[in-house]
Length: 499
Image (cartoon, rainbow, N blue to C red):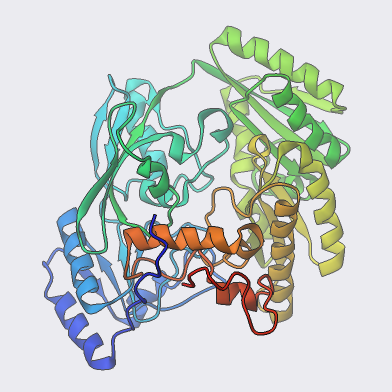
């Protein structure tokens, strides 16, 4: 990889250039919608991280790949930044617009192009909703495994951009483990493909690089995903613990016993009480924490695995073990977990959802640290997370109308992410970096590693027009954040190219 300094990002268009660009946009094919009025573009000023907002120059909604390519070529010609957007359910500000840039919405590209029940694949446009994939595959006894909590609304294109997971990712993997092929457009409008329909493809594994790249490398226009047979049956254990650390230790003990549950989720008392009042899932409100442990497969496999997990949970100090008696009760148990975020919105004016990952054996330690931080910042925090893979989702409750509370919530969140790194984890799991965690990247990655990230970005997008200033922090940003030390006016390692 060439680490020479990439070309500087194109300057934002001047006022006359902007008018010329907007005029050129309006001359695109009639089927390509261009929104410029303030009331039309305001809904696109943010994604699910509503604390950070910015109005774009315009929002463009192509209805096919050819129109999207034409938009990208026009933007490249005028030096206009482009922010690709799916359903806008992301939680890290990755789809927040750039000033004097456009939002390229792929929501109208929502066709299921093909379902092959023999190869067990589905080929889709990026605007297809996650849940719709499984609904379309259901007649063939198949489904798509990654299931983010927002699966009723989030799109497969956004899932690819963020490498989304879900409650069943422990057994069935994240988006990167379930996508076979991605077709996309570069900033110049060139069609490129990553991966293949075969089990493997020659050359570097650029498919894995593309998934999770947050719209910084190319714009997804088509995705082929792997479908799997729907299990014959499934059951869920709801296990109660009188101490959060015992619950965290039980997670590690289940996996250490050689059991890989279909789902392994944990919620603390604050989260279960908020959820129970909302959906009445039948949760144990006296427990300090509950675990939801799902087994799926044949009836014989499920019966054996439920028994094994129950034994491990009992040995770890579970005070109550309840197994779902039927499919309705199983879905009822999961409904609470799936509705944890909206439930938090009922008990607080605002909440800040974090996304860090740690080794399973250190879950209890992080939860104890978060309890201490609650006292330090004077804010409540509900904990609900994918315990099986250590993907934590603390929900910090605050009042967005109070600037001081918001600043404390931001600092609280940054401390949680830095604690994750300290405990051997990472600052993100499935929400991406976007603008939310860009400072925290300074904590986890060295200047040399960040330079390599920029070099890869340069290889795909040398003009830095695709979702610029997201995910990868500059050295100047890290210095401002206080995580890059400058001594005697000299940066460390002055021989390394700066970006």
